[in-house]
Image (cartoon, rainbow, N blue to C red; front, side, top):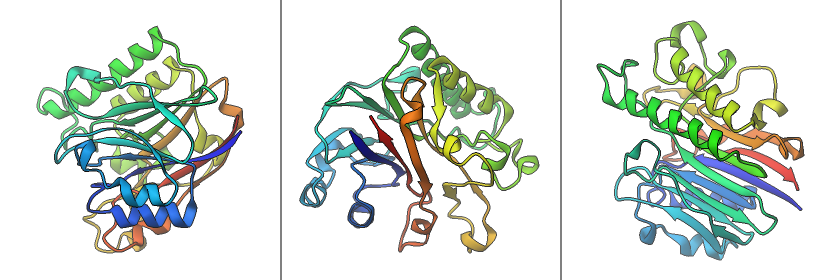
Length: 262
């Protein structure tokens, strides 16, 4: 079984319904995982997606904030969710394919602006969220699994436009990167994107604050696709759709793709 999967922080699925439909039409991934849907599940505009062949959806939502959804052409069943750090927010949902592969769709908290948990509650929540992810994967070792989403951390020096200038900026601080790697190690996760594209600058997010995001190119790779060690070698054809950032009224994130032969 071969399928292509994409992950995209859409920053409001109702506001950008037509952009989702455009991606599904142009690229036709078998599975699309969305984050920051900003919608209750019952108000996600499924009709247009279903008309394009995405008849299956597993989602968790809330009004105005967060929210994760998995759209699929392939049959999927709901595999639950985790409320890491007990935030009471829709930040994780899992679905299972007929071949037994579990897909985790995650939206890790951004963490605010100050990288100090004593001064910034949101930063502490982010670290706690990652710690609980790590602990879950240690106690319930995942297998035959894929994890995707906006993890809000750019771990490598070449995942940011300037390693030196971003060392004290939330998303690239050493403490966040350390927590990120602990989660990876706990679940025996492989970074599929970097396995396919091991060298060079690589970004999936560009700030709305940049008037000319393309020319300035001050990006970060915040969006990830992982696979457990038992299936990691089946992944291939990774790519990041940079041009999507230039679409009309875009998200500040762009889709990340990978294919799997399972």
